[in-house]
Picture 1 (tube, one colour):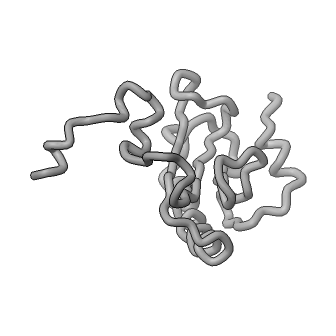
Picture 2 (cartoon, rainbow, N blue to C red):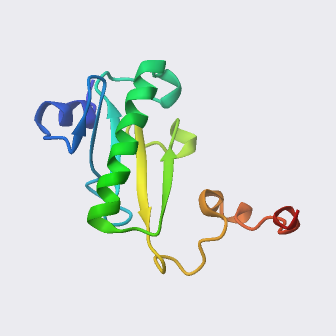
Amino acid sequence: MNCPFCEKLKTIKPILENDLAIAFYDEFPVNPGHMLFITKRHVETFFDTTSDEKKAIFELVDKAKELIDIDFKPDGYNIGLNCGFYAGQTVMHIHLHLIPRYKGDIENPKGGIRAIIPSKKEYNSKILEN
């Protein structure tokens, strides 16, 4: 098996760590402060993790947000998981993205995560009026 994240586990000094997961800054960040969270055990997707591994990842996400808030002062966050090739997963080892967002980093952030499929970004604004 040739997994870049399993290899990284052998050499990286994590930003945060617990018994089941680690957090580190993304080598190809979308924005300053972009962090990744992976399990120490090799599993492909979020759906393959145990409930303890899910809990471990989200414990680190909470701690990471505190660090990023202090160091980078973002205006918002996106949290993302790509599960499977057709969802855009390129490294087949579970990794959660915590992406700080900044006012002005894109022209119009409306639609947020829906923008992964551009034709679905715009949705009925009447939903928001109720």
